[in-house]
Length: 603
Ligand code: GLY
Image (cartoon, rainbow, N blue to C red):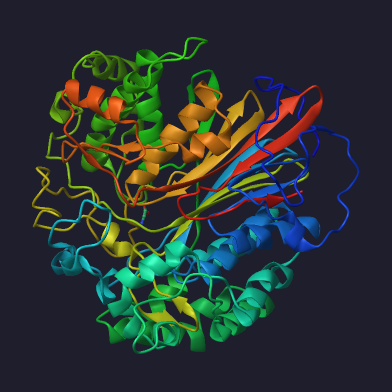
């Protein structure tokens, strides 16, 4: 890749080339390296969850999906082409998390003009949606392990208009070079010839086996007598292979008009959905200005509303840089986790009170980020004691106070990072919401249940939550629900230095913030930053959840400061690529989260 003129913090050592198949050795190559020569695709897959590459890299949460993206890059595609190929391959190999029946956000950096574009292809509510239609689905407390309570299992009304096909088409129209027919091919092959179910997918299939048994596609994967999908035993999805090739030949239109669109409407109606052919025809991708802020000497560019993820991360980091400034002195781990946990309380309250679809409600970002307000919130911090969440609550005087809404916990989703040989960068988060979405498949893909991300009215989402609901994120025709997805690119000057994002409901933003903070502020190699044990704390309930691998002494120290703790299971999954420039050379440190068994691929 061509080196941009300015250099990020120089790094003198390469740390992550771990017994790799096909990745570079620990040697930075000249940036003027000749065009990449072809090589067998499988040789591009890292043997471990982290690897270093000289030319291009893809990090996703399934090895075969990372390889699909790398194949397209090796064939001369851009980061947009590769991100699309990876998304489609994830829909095949990781079908519980994302696919053509869902939607997402794409953040794209184009090296030739240093532009950053944000495409919103999230699912939207049908015209027949009402605020009360979803209420019966959202009763009952989400389990603390991140699962979904049986009573909250979604059916038809939570199916939103899928945005993924139009999102892929738009990404390629703006930034692709290789053509949709070529982009779909790795995923179509995988669906035809067989994909390898991960341990993660096998585990999800056991939890959702009831839903799978009710669906014809699910039945082929979980025949009578089986308790779920078997890890590592290849599975095929010929219907999806056909759908992908039809997409490649005809474009996204086939999902929004005609026979396939009618099939989607019928399948949704079969489970009580209110989606119509007119809703599908009306779907549009939205381009929004990305959200950005300077934190710790870097420019962080991330998702704007209707995601609350970007705001929560930037608001948290604005506090963190006051409480745990960067520099050479390495802070104690308990100090870092205490500060992180405290930093999320206020932003989660803001999210619950002020966030909604920006095409329908005004999200007061300027007022929320006002320096005096950030300073007032920073002053609440006590380095020795946890404060109650409401101590960080700062209602905006110009808005009716209103009560903050409950934030659904959520789970599922997938994140992809790509850097191509020309220096273009894609950070894409894609989802069908909870595992296997609405539990209904069409033409080989699962329909989403994304509208569960609306707050319900009038009953609280969770009896365990002290936060009642509010109006801004209520379901209404055409609206897109508030998300936590946080696709992010961090810059040093004009140069991208870190691509990052994650999956896992509200834990997306706490996990992405932690991993990015370690990579940027402590200069931790991304493989370590992504794997490091994580915590989660939102405004409510007032519990700090820590992954079991967190050092016992650190958890004890957090308890001594007044945090009520429990075990964090089923946490988020983070992917990242660091772009390292040193001595006129560039290399890419790529990491897939070992929690889901992903591996990066590249050259
Ligand atoms: N459904 C997960 C999210 O949008 O945050």
